[in-house]
Image (cartoon, rainbow, N blue to C red; front, side):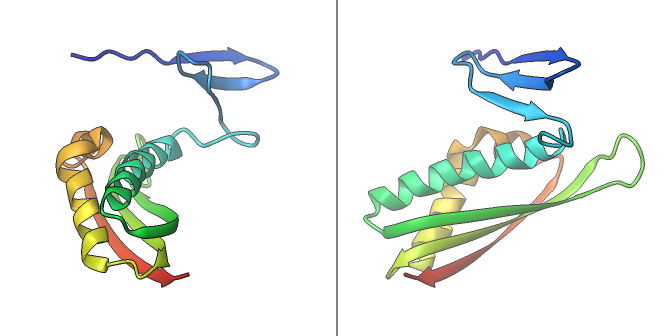
Length: 134
């Protein structure tokens, strides 16, 4: 099994600093950083988007940009459990095939995206796709 380690450093001046072993950093906690619960949705769309771009490139789709948003719904009371995450993929390019984008997302969800695989039984995850001609 693969093992990764991430780190958190807190000090009163820099708030919470998350980093990986290569020291890529994310500042956590408002007002100067990302809300902790947003990191989960960000990880989900980051994981899936990477797969989708790789798959579409292999399919020789002329993808110029991929814009992805995730809208999450959480309980109103602690611990603010996630109930639903809706992902919207916007593929921008020339003659992008909707079916190929749809298949790329399906492959990511079913085969490659570890974040999706971890969340799918705990949170309702849905998606929509929009194709924009460049």
